[in-house]
Length: 312
View (cartoon, rainbow, N blue to C red):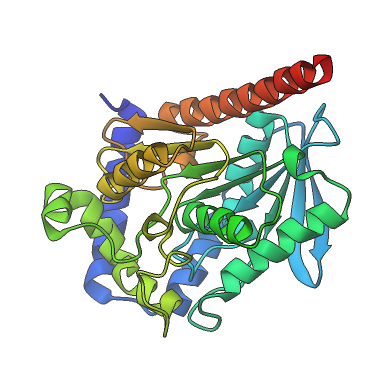
């Protein structure tokens, strides 16, 4: 059963998004509201910020004290491919960096509708290549993202695989948006409060803004439509109350049948983007702790395999 803190959060979000759903604000107003809300976020103690320039793209490092210098997490923020920035996700990325004990690079990839597909994917690939050029081994890189950023990370994996490029050690999707068409009407009706919040944020139109002239069924737009063989270990977290739930479960089943090691963690009754509220919601802190445990297990397995190979 969700915590009392989450119940309060859910009530607040439902009340806050009601007027938005009725007024249908334009995208610039939604972006401004998201940036304003970011003013109340704070990075955890012992995580230090450092500006970065990734081939002209704004980015920043979030560096936890004690993180190993040779390992890195590339983070792709959510926001339906149309909103969000380094500011809106800085607190979440900082908390994730601390939980994983990984130096984390967050990037401000280009947004639709000004820059539709494949701009965001090109920027994600640019950041990944930049890390390789900085001397990081692919086996020491992980990719993570929430919502649209989670989908973007999974699209990046397929793109790298098809281009025969070295793949990262693992990828993490926090409530990833992997099918831009969104789930069925019946599923939306079963999650009425969640649906109202998504509709208030115009999410149903954002997929078409990002895809533009590209079919939403393109595998690099909706990664669940692609071939999933050959991908590295995946950790996927989702709530059973999210409208994205069914698509995520189907994706994980498909990936597993394709031979991909998949860890699916389903939480009970939580709203989309609950990870953002880690300071207030215990389930968010639990989720981030489990991400940290996953990354540590991947590194441990990698090290054990290396020792076996050396002995052979």
